[in-house]
Image 1 (cartoon, rainbow, N blue to C red):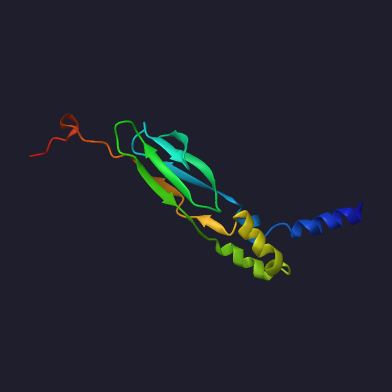
Image 2: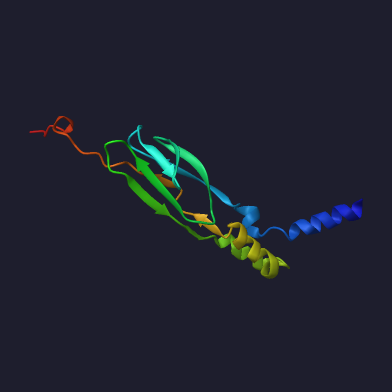
Length: 135
């Protein structure tokens, strides 16, 4: 039984990299809108109204869109950048051979930065909504 446990523990060392352990493969981002009626779409799927917080995979690019009826949609493409924690794999005995590829395959070698976004649809201004100039 002790041998089996030891084999499983050693096996686990070969299934993750430093970035996978420390940073993970998902990150929380916040998408805010100045209008509470704005519908926020992430990668084509409606995810909420107004301000939302969600987890995204770090290994790819994502598209954010803010929509409101009668207004012009606003979109933003967010991409991932290299996660420097991945470089810690150099200090592992098996890091160069196994851990680096694992971090790149599972997406942990990337991170989303910044983590907060503000998107507000562009709505036409009607005369009754225009502010009165101060004299």
